[in-house]
Amino acid sequence: METEEANIDFKLIGERLREERLKKGMSQEELAEKLDVAVGYLSRVERGGTTINLRRLGQVSIILDIPLERLVTGIVKEDKRYLEEDFYEIFKQCSKEKKRLIYNIARIVAGVKFV
Image (cartoon, one colour):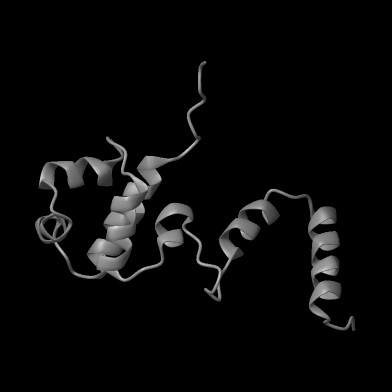
């Protein structure tokens, strides 16, 4: 029986991992040592050249003190900016009429009164 591979963007996960590592001021060597992996492996993960398993990603999350969901999805639900970038990307592709409709719906949902 043939199985389908999950549609996971390991390159994007690697980019997020690198970004968060650099924010913490940590070198690849330091993170690789804490993870007990080769620097070459970590470098390949950050470039998207190899996959990283969930257990190892969980270790990265703990070491870098960031939510696992940030590495996997780029979004943290508790973040004040949750979905803003995604929403903006969708919004900017809409016509002026659709933007006005979305704006009006958002005002209704948010409970903002119309002037």
